[in-house]
Image (cartoon, rainbow, N blue to C red; front, side, top):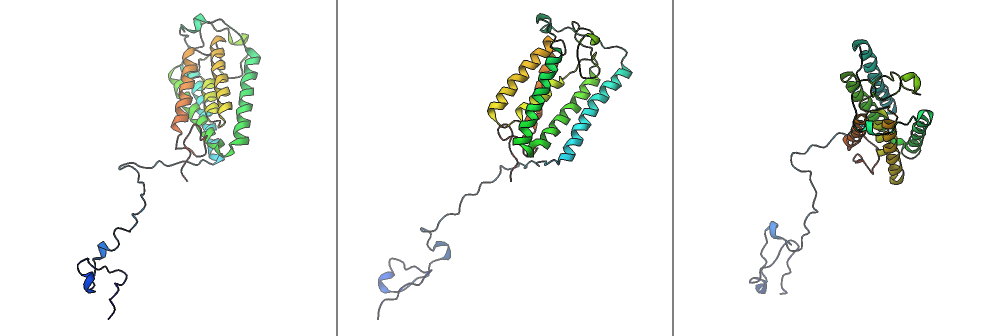
Length: 253
């Protein structure tokens, strides 16, 4: 009689194989040497909670932006009614800088900056525009709170409001944190192209220094504006959708 071949799922032990008898192997040991281990699946760290990513609609973003501007302007108007006068405070850095009245060229440079960044964002990163508008709205809302809590007048060496060219209301007020510096910082950091982003950040720093020299802002105004803008962009990592992947973490798919 020919020897009995073991069926699939069975294995003959070494001492029994010569006799032809087949011993059923436990299911847990069948082909244990040839089995392929399951692929490793990464798991999130224990106790971690995934962040919710907000995908703002353009209409919602515009509402946030308008509300933020409303808080800022409303705070200025309210402080005008409640505060009898706005004292100036010394600025040791500004006092050592020469006075330069940039006037119309300065405002035109700011307008050119806005047009450039808006064109880059709309043309190259249209899906991220609502998130950028939300950041701007939050910035102006926080700024409005500070404007109400710190009713300070313009720098002591600033010329009278009638003698300088300004496009914003309440020129006799100080604006802490600085709106130009904060807005320009947010827009610059949200531009995806690294070359454009570097150029825009340099322009932002030059403009901030120029606004201090023009006595339009205190030194603390521009520093706080840039810091708040940077903080908001950093806060937006993983929280707002479709922002620049070079500076912000894109939302998971």
